Length: 245
Image 1 (cartoon, rainbow, N blue to C red):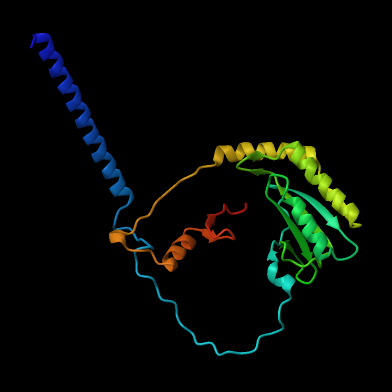
Image 2: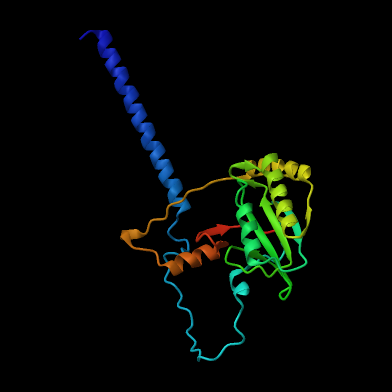
């Protein structure tokens, strides 16, 4: 083996050794940071014993008047459509909308590529209610709301115009009066909202693994989520919502 070959081998060994030492240093530094972030001395809601709720005996008794089906199936939405994130069409009828007409409108609202919802004014409760296909059409005042932005981007003019045309056509068939917001302003707002969401949107994935293969009790998971400000929603997942200003 020539002197040149020996020198090249020595240089290669030094480079490999340097890379190995650098990786060890990086691994040690990362481990120290993780230990600081997940210090075992911190209070962990998931690992602490759950506090047993106080048990109170409740004697059976007859309740008040039974709720109607409409009260049961309609979720509260006290403020109606959200003007910041939704485009709304206000619909007013002389008579209750009726079940068949309600389902017809709900079917049409689901065809525009953006989340949409239908709200009905509950005269007895004095609040808006979210209507679904199982609701009864006993409302005279409705709001059809189309979400301006989702992960697919902002609403486009054909989608918004199709939504407006469908609501107007439905209102014409059922003798309703309809008032619709300005579409040009809504399209501008949708683009601005989409840009804002793009700047603020952050997706974080975190896996929590129990020690020794143990399982986390559902009660502790719920307690930890609620304590952190998350709320259980209709999709079965816990969501954190920024409080309204």
